[in-house]
Image (tube, rainbow, N blue to C red; front, side):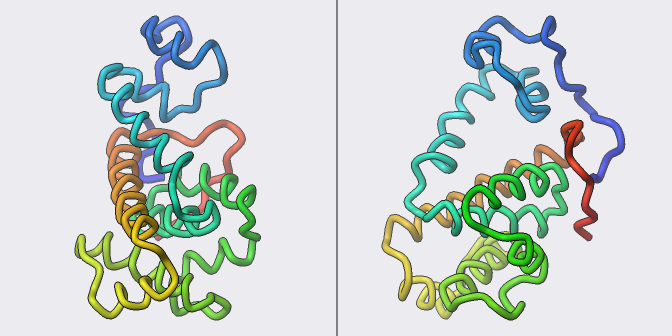
Length: 181
């Protein structure tokens, strides 16, 4: 975690705006949502796009999580990493693969498609652009909509990482901090 204390503390149940309570139906709310609840209009509109990325993405859930976890590493977003390790495990990644995501495309064991996915993620985060060579490698394995979803997935989680890091969203109580630098 970059900050030991939140810059915007997560709202308690009694502080949540009514529209947020209704949207979540009284269910469990993670710290990210309790923090974003400071700005209900932003949260409502952001969730629409976030739901596409997590729920309607044309990438396989496994590929989506490889990209998201790589963004978490590159942005040193501990909260993002912790949440998506769980999701990645549910999507078919194993602990060894999750460890290799920290090493990137050059780590042994990645398929050519996964190497291209990791390289593209690195390039998007570093330069907001995928090189022609990497694009060609991706195009050998992914359809047009998947290529677009990859760009938007990396962009979404780069944005989320910026918000998490800057606002100081803290890990959930059962999360274990992992140094990402």
